[in-house]
Length: 172
Image (cartoon, rainbow, N blue to C red):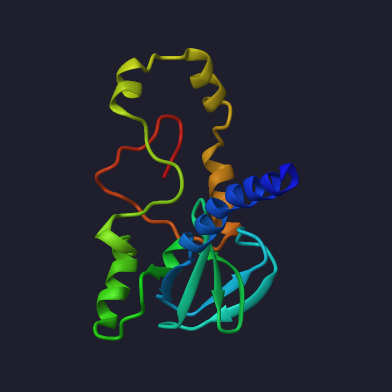
C-alpha cells in the first residue's frame, strides 16, 4: 500500500507539468520579408536556412531583439522585425511593409525598438559638468589637415555650409 501511494503522489505531481507543456504551445507568426535563419541570435552567426515573405512561422522563443523560429526549410534565429506575430494574412501586404518601416510590426501595433535609448529626464537634470571628461574628448580632436587627408582617402567631397562659422585656427 505504501508503495502504491508513493506512485500516486509522483504521478499526481507530474500532471500539472504535463498540462503546462500542453498550454505553452508555440506562437504563430508570418514572415514580413525574405530573410535568413541563423544558428545563434547574432547578425554574424552561421546561416542555417531561410524563409520567404508571407511564409508561416512557428515562434519558439524570444531573446532580446531576436526570435527563434521554425520555418518550412529549417529553424533558427531571426531579427524580431522580420516577423509579424499572429497568423499570416495576404489581405493587405502593404500594411505589413508599412508596419515594419514604422516599427509597428507585431500585435497591438506597439512600436518595438532595438539598441540604446537616450537619457531620461531625471538623468539629464542630474547631469553635472565634468572637466576631466571634456579634456579627454578634446584629446581625440584632429587637425583640419588630418580631416582633409581622411576625407581624401575615403574619396569624400567637401561641402561648404554658408550658415556655419569657420572654426578658430583652421580653414574650411
